Image 1 (cartoon, rainbow, N blue to C red):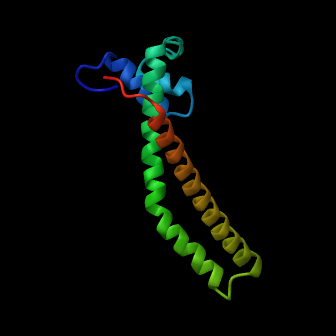
Image 2 (cartoon, rainbow, N blue to C red):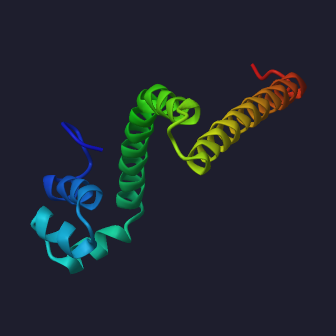
Image 3 (spheres, rainbow, N blue to C red):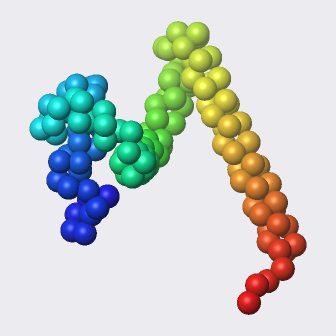
Length: 131
């Protein structure tokens, strides 16, 4: 999307960055140095939509990576709350429930990934090689 050889000009790249960082389209247009009308027109262009979606995915990928980095500390916090006798019982129960629920979600996700992998392997095995 950005950098040398980009099919977008600097203003379009700035608009995508502004769309990711500003609260609304009006503020994004101002930050990018274009009119709201221009930004709205660009948002209707398939190539711009694609680049914007790619940028949003990259931003979410980075955010998810940060969440995963914090997961160990979050689990430690839940465990401390759960076993701390001075913590109100309702809070300890909520922490325990959260730990169990997330643990179950993790198992379900692993099961789904394993099943999807098996389906993909089976589909590939049935596909005749082309050469």
